[in-house]
Amino acid sequence: MKKQTQFSEQLETFHQLHVGTSPLVLVNVWDAASAMIVQASGAKALATSSASLAWSLGYADGGDLPVDALLFAVANIMRVSKLPVTVDIEDGYSDKPEEVVSLVAELVRLGVVGINIEDGEQSSELLVDKITAIRASSCCRQVFINARTDVYLRELVSHDGALDITKSRLKRYQAAGADCGFIPGIDAEDIALRLRSDLIMPLNFMLAGDHLAVSTHAELLLKQGVIRFSVGPGSFLDTYSTLKHRTKLSVKPFKDNEQRELLHYNEMNTLVMCTR
Image (cartoon, rainbow, N blue to C red; front, side, top):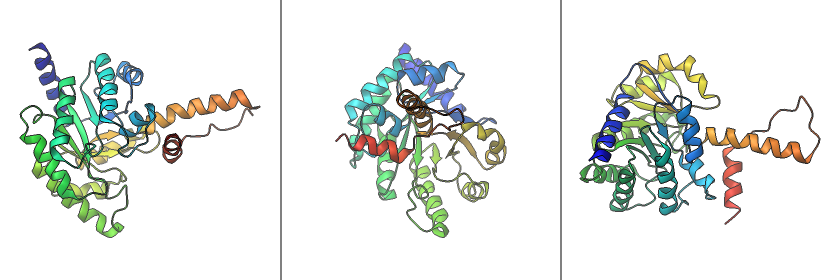
């Protein structure tokens, strides 16, 4: 009973963070250590990055992570978390809605209150089916669903048609039961305004570079319904850029004015893929 009460309270808290007048900034985590650091820094909620979590366990981003490994990592995060936690599950690691529901149910049992789930390069109908199945399940119908569409990120259609396709997909995900719409690959106010005209649910944008830039950008975006901002794998890449930098310091002479070389998404994903 105590665990169920805590879940309900954290779920309500997480919902309220999406309807306030202040932006919800999520610095994505990938393990217990990163979760503890972000939590101690004053975060209001914790969110995993699927890429970061997969990399931390030696798997490439893009569906390679075994579900058992995901659940093990999330269990460790939940063990140290006192905040609402939302987990990025890519496309649910399955094309079968019933298997996606099974995964979400396991996450809910761990105390997770929210998920990210994406369409990727697959049809919007498949994600609609997955969201519908989650909402029809008695054990996980209350979970907060952040539905991600990759039209812009993956450049699935030409720029002129991307907005219309994105809006159409988000409207379908909203009708199926999504609580929030995530559109990585854009951060423009005019696009947010045009999306907002047909959507009730709040929107989530991904921040590029320094996440503190949200402070100068958020007011305009908030007016267009963009409540949630996340950094995705940016926090992981920045952290491990420091490790890469320190490693270079130990193996070669280093000039005082030499810039730290940043670790990039493709570089990290390639490193992991080479271990297969």
